[in-house]
Image (cartoon, rainbow, N blue to C red; front, side, top):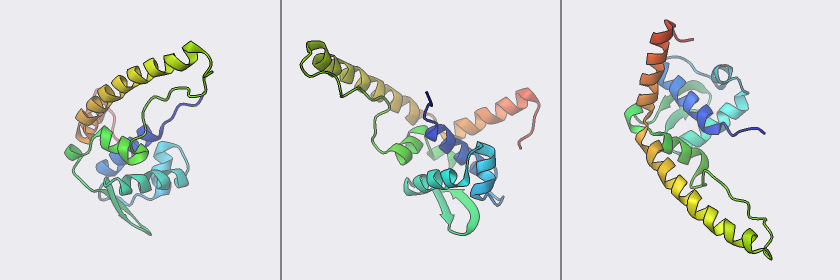
Length: 147
């Protein structure tokens, strides 16, 4: 089973851009860091642009954060990528003639709504600046530099 990585890849991109604001960062260069293809990076960057998190000019490899890292949250990135799509998805193809098949989905929906609310609250409290700070801490502990 492949797990979705769009959010983590998008945060990787935002972090990379925040760390190297004066560096020419083409989608090819960013894709090397994410270990993916440039088209996927462009797709994510386009969503981040539409979400108001990035600015860029077509043909110029100089993307920039549209807001300061203190003003960008994980929830902002999630919303830019997924809109209002829920984090967890229930099975809607259960047997409608089965009492469990119908009613368990109502219970699961209530539980998933609770998880969604808590996840959004937590993601809204984590800023890109916090991620950058934690990244720097990890590098310091490892005694390493960036790329």
